[in-house]
Length: 344
Ligand SMILES: O=CC(=O)O
Image 1: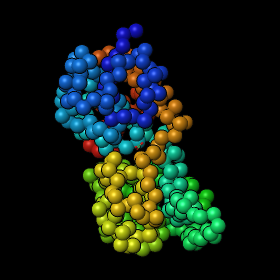
Image 2: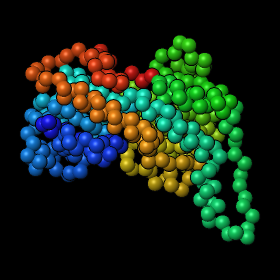
Image 3: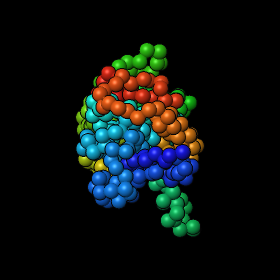
Image 4: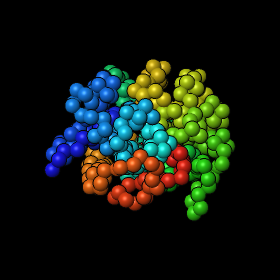
């Protein structure tokens, strides 16, 4: 079988496992491992840009209009993440490129991370762990009492697949769940707020899990943080820029909010230094969606999806096409009509 060139941007979490399993099918062009501009990098591999038909990408490197402009034959873009904010979706649509994401596959993992962060911030598990390790054995261990999670009012921003899983888990803790999303959901028992400030005013904690779009950038701004108040906790498992990070740091340092559990940051991999000294902040390296189990399933789905794509004839036109929602197995495809994914 002829090996297909596959351009890999960013460092998808399924690497290197996916590479090991599929090296008999693809020439992996690992642009993430090179500092060269793309065309030079491809030249070092003796690969013509026009021979690349598929891209596997990850938020660590944006798939921009400039990159797409260098690769005239690309017909398929696959991301191993639920978020697609690193992909220029309008340009893909304009070029008739099919974009496929892993969708809700790891929603339960991300929801677990959100609950873990919330519990850690409230019960100060990480902070106490650091203190206990430093304690002298002969001295009594002291601690401050934690606010109980049960009974808390928790607002979910973005009630899509991840938000729904977060809600399920919070219910099990006897929390009062409420939410904000672009539209009120029928058949959802949680109280809906069309306005994030109103949601924050009525909550003890906010969990942010909506996709990053032009509309949701800085959806958590200073006004929302002040409405949440000095005991309020923010958990972000969505994307860093959903929160105005400068204001978040300011509010945390000034004690204007109670704490934060963050799996994502506005300028990853940079984490604001001020956060390191704060015991009411728990930090995680954008690891929410990446359990061993989901990685294995992602590997299988990515392999099946690429195989289905390469089994079709090469594209002979770059005119926009109507995307077929269920052409590739088990993935969520982009809606054909809009420029950016709606946040749930
Ligand atoms: O960040 C991870 C994802 O979007 O799946």
